[in-house]
Length: 178
Ligand SMILES: CC(C)(COP(=O)(O)OP(=O)(O)OC[C@H]1O[C@@H](n2cnc3c(N)ncnc32)[C@H](O)[C@@H]1OP(=O)(O)O)[C@@H](O)C(=O)NCCC(=O)NCCS
Image (tube, rainbow, N blue to C red):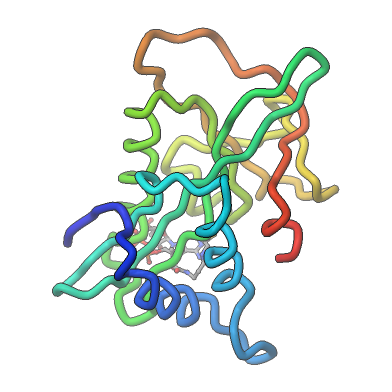
């Protein structure tokens, strides 16, 4: 297994991983494929935080962190959204998904990022330290998400500054279409 940031030549392989992992009978191309393509061309894209997992020389896993903002009464601060996370079905359940998510979170912490939000199955994400985002006072554009709306405060490189300020997490437009 090799974990590394996505390179331009990986875009096709990443699309195939997303299309196979999120395949549904009712759509020809799952929305996660378009989401990543749109984010890749946006100001919210952070090249060091789009992580691929190679296995047997083939890109089969993906975890993406992109920029979001948390708006509070006082100010607006930068944070990250995790997703999509995907592993090609023929390589699932051998640890690649966990490894590629952890690699993306480690890279974010090294860059001094503090807060990551995710919308997904708590049974998968709690192993990385995610917990309910509403307990941190973080709201999303989608109402009534409950447990799948999660957040993780990253270990801070330069020493802790306490919990993040509560507020509304602002997602860029590509997210609002999915
Ligand atoms: C979710 C996904 C990325 C996990 O990748 P993976 O390489 O199979 O994960 P791992 O092998 O690292 O497994 C890690 C653990 O997650 C569990 N797991 C796998 N898929 C899961 C899912 N959809 N929901 C909850 N837990 C899941 C595994 O059972 C394993 O648990 P264990 O450590 O207790 O045995 C992969 O199954 C996938 O691409 N699913 C389809 C796309 C998707 O739903 N992505 C978003 C996830 S919320």
